[in-house]
Image 1 (cartoon, rainbow, N blue to C red):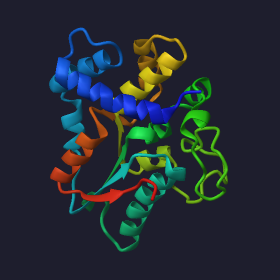
Image 2 (cartoon, helix red, strand yellow):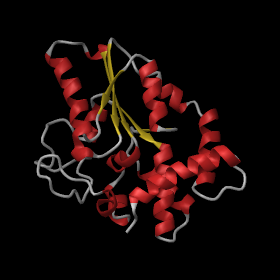
Image 3 (cartoon, rainbow, N blue to C red):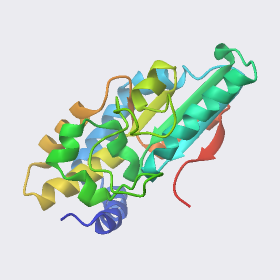
Image 4 (cartoon, rainbow, N blue to C red):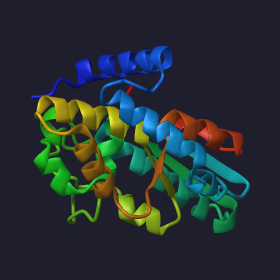
Length: 225
C-alpha cells in the first residue's frame, strides 16, 4: 500500500527538482507539474473564480486534511450563523480550499474504491472515530454527517466556493501511479475527471488561499490539531 508520508517527502523533492532543472527532461510527476504551470499561466478560469468572492463578510477555510469532514462543517456553520444574525447572502463569501490530503473529499466514490483511498489516507469520521471507507461527503445517506447542510453538494448549492489543489492532484496521483505500475498522466486525468461539478481546480491550494486573502477573506485553519 502506498506510503503517503514518503509521497510528501517526494513532493518536496519534486519541487526542488523542478526549480533546479526546469521542466524539460524531468520525469513524471515533475513534468506534469511543469505542464500545469504553463497551463495555469494562460488559463483565465482561476482568476474568474477568485473574482466571484464578494461582500463584506468573507472567509477562506484551509483544509489540508479530511479531518473527519470538519472543514465542510465549519464552512456550513459560517454560512448558517451569518444567516442567523441577519446578514444578507450577498454580503457573505465562504471559500473552502481542499489541498494536500483533503483532495479525496472532492472526488467520486468510484475513485475512492479503485485507488483504495481509505487505506492510503486513513480518514476517520469526526463523530464515530471509525474509518471512512466511502466518500460520504457528497450526497450522503441520512445519518452519515452530523450537521444538516454540510454535504459538499449542499455547500456548493448554497454558494460556497470550493477549490481543489492541482499540485496535490498531480503529485499524489503520480505516486499512486508509480505504486500501481500505471501511467501517471492517465491516472491524473482520471482523478481530474472525477472531481465533482462546481469545484474549481486551482493551480495550488496555497496560491488559492493567498488570492482569497488578497480579496479580503479572513483565514480559518480547517486541518487537524
